[in-house]
Amino acid sequence: MATYQMNFNQDFTSLSVLSPTGLRLYSIASQDKVEEIFAKDNTEQIRIVERLFNSSLVVLVTAQKPNCLKMLHFKKKQDICNCFYPSEILCVRMNRQRLIVCLAESIHIHDIRDMKILHSIENIAPNEQGLCALSLNSHLAFPVCQNSGELRIFNASKLRTGMTIRAHDTPLSALAFSPSGALLATASERGTVIRVFCVKNGQRVQEFRRGVSCVRIASLVFSASGDFLCASSNTETVHVFKIDARAVESVELKAIADVAAKSENSANESGAATTAEEANKTAAPVASWGGMFSKAVSSLLLPTQVSEVLAQDRSFATVQLAQGGLRHICALTRVQKELRLLIACEDGFLYVHEFLADRGGACKLLSVHDLRGALEDVIELQLSESVLRSQIKSASPASMTSMTQPSLTLLKSCAASVLIENPDPTQDNSYASILKGDQADAMSDSAKFRKLCDAIDTPTKLYDERQFPPVAIAAKD
Image 1: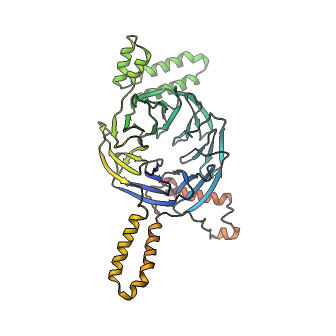
Image 2: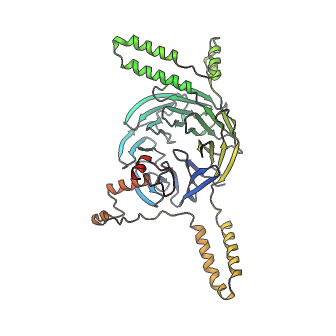
Image 3: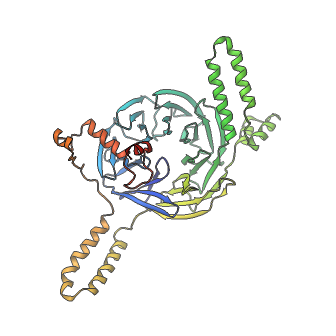
């Protein structure tokens, strides 16, 4: 069975489907409509695909050139630029300001507007999986140790090194920021426990128990609102956990108190400590029966491990998959104003589930979309032959011989033209370009900047009603 590499964009409105034969981009308009907006032959053996929100900018990494990042304006079918790195590219992350390229022992931070390298994080712990996460407000998280689940947070916007968090005892396998960038979810190679940390002070906010058996976490993602956390693995169950708003508020109050305490001088240290202590007392406690019960049990001098297990929250909602052992990528977002759980499987299907935010429970399957594309040769050829026979029957005997072969050739070419090849860059015929004598194979920095901006700021009339960024679109109108 052919496997498909599925990947959502940053706001879960688009899905890329990569197979050994081709690349397709789909727009998720509704639970019943998934529209193909781009197709490309996979002659270059594409390994990594990332689309920037609903813009026209797509980045590709191929197996033929694993150290080259290729930027594409897919709606105009134009190459923007190619960026080369000293070793194989393992992961690419993007938001509205930054583009992150993760290698095995270094991370490179670009300004997405002109692709200039702003900073490089060198000599990091070997990261063979290319594990890293980028928030919408440009917080970057990546592992710093091979033997434990220790990670570092880096401010990619201000280019400042942040705190180090020891999230797990075993190496990390998944990282995910909340949409606001205030929370960071982590999972280790065991996959039994998922933890949520506050980005401001590194304090643990919540801990969830996924199960008791060790699994590989395939997908860890917050909902678009940040109220839920979804996790999938190689088992038959997808878990959705509920983020405790009062626990988050309590930790954030403590973070504010800690900042206030640090800003006080030595003469007012006692007053600052009192303020922080009062903030912790007035903050709402964690609204978890498991948490309150664990405190009561801890008072009975039970082992610390038992208390921690009792404090772990269980899943709020679940999905039972038809088959385990496959890789599933999840997204919890609103589709036509309704909250839906999207599960993209490596078998080439997209499953849309109902999600009840008020009571959780088992999620009902609403629709299934086959994104594998048209079957090659057999079905396409049979359909063409049937159309050809109908045309032959309706045609006159004199024209039958002359039309048979050309019509069959035309229908075959139409069926094959579903996959669009990447053409050469279109020549710029503007007045400025004619005066400068720009060549397609020698693009200047200004031309590259214009193409990048054009890919990011594509007008909404081409395909999407919601293009990035909305401010630039409003200014154009």
